[in-house]
Length: 223
Image 1 (cartoon, rainbow, N blue to C red):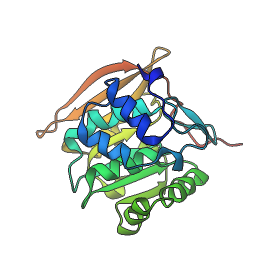
Image 2 (image 1 turned 180 degrees about the horizontal axis):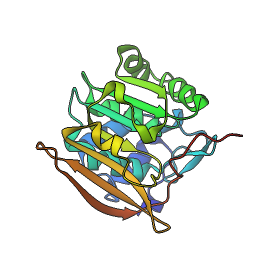
Image 3 (image 1 turned 180 degrees about the vertical axis):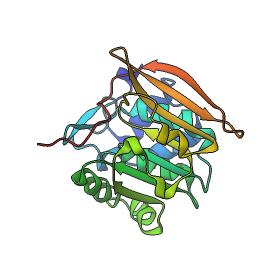
Image 4 (image 1 turned 45 degrees about the vertical axis):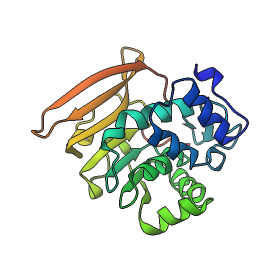
């Protein structure tokens, strides 16, 4: 039903995602309604499809952002700390910040400085985004997402927005116990979403979910 979920406005897009069963949780719907995708997607922002944002990066389709939020939702409580790897244009970083306020913090990590600056600039297009940036609810940093961002760890939830070559141990180590990691993983020329849970005793379980197609989690391009 994703292909039927596009709309003429942000509200229409989110309502269609809800109507088609791609958003099922009221908290996720409210958060996505509060963040105008037009501030983050340069072309056709209300289409339910991925779009290029430059620098060999993309903004994922809205239904994938909804899936990530719903999978992580039990750990997205007010005051929670979240890591968003491959934050790109900043859209999901902002949505996640809406889900953990008041008192929460989301760190968006990008490996290309212009994308760090893009996320910051896009977030400041709205009053809500400016407030989150100024209050420390959102922070964008440049770094290798495969290594996470140890300076703010541990995280209640971690989202990875690019396909990893494996289960990077650094990310699991930076996850709070209990905590949850949502990431696409490349395996045998296929990609699947994995939901990785760290339990209170530190044990880790991996649940394989839907097949997907993401750009790879790699070094910054040299060109």
